[in-house]
Length: 315
Image (cartoon, rainbow, N blue to C red; front, side, top):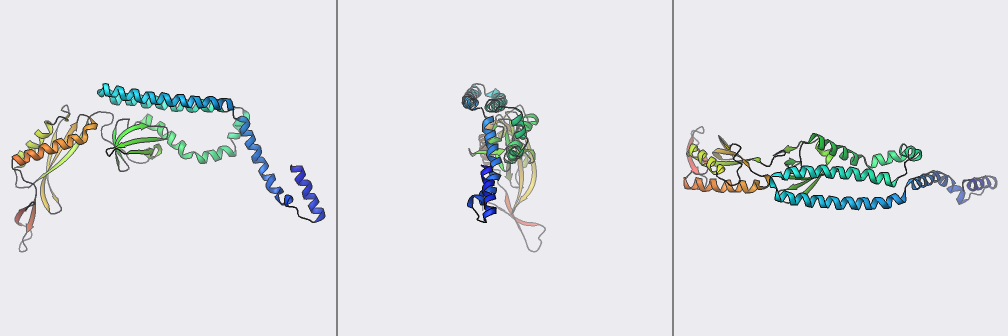
């Protein structure tokens, strides 16, 4: 074809007439190497291996589904081993992903000097630019498995989202929020942003709850009641201490005494049930003991440094 185009160009030069084929000759000549490169790529693909790779991928998908169902069933039977089972499942999934990827590549391509030279050329650069984010996430996934800033089952805060890690993949991490939303986060985000982990591989986790009372109430009695309510909850992990911190704060127009209860829930799944139970117990206890809520400070104009009256917030 290139010889014919050269002949047409020569005739055009002699006769002075410009042929459309002569005008298109440079474009065809430039496209010829691209067509030849595509032909090389097609010859390097082992189509029988591609057919086999389809069954490999299907088999891996079935294995992954069976693994997830098995781990879910065992976690229900052995709740104390739930996090350990999820860690084992995550590691097994990681090995399956890597093994399947290498197997598919090995079966689908005929590795020889030609394909190595082709990978080292322009095609490799183009593919590199196209999958740079994917490669970065893949490397970040390996770093997460090694460094372990969190594990499957941990309750973390990341990028304004709060929830449980349900899966750590080659490309992304899945986070199940308390609002039952699944958030997918690329692995490379965790290399530069801060992650807050609430339990770090343990079932129990510390919860913080604040309660406010008026400054003129019996603070010591209120502190005792708050501690008793936290200890008596069915969701409290009693092997770790329950602490009640007291300090005086001003919030908007309120002068109040803040009781900050720090207690551990026995399983992260019961975090909100634990907080609700303790709050209900504390409110009932304060009501029975006639411990009142914070008050609004009203200051006189003549002496603004001293409070002239304290009005109940509810009045």
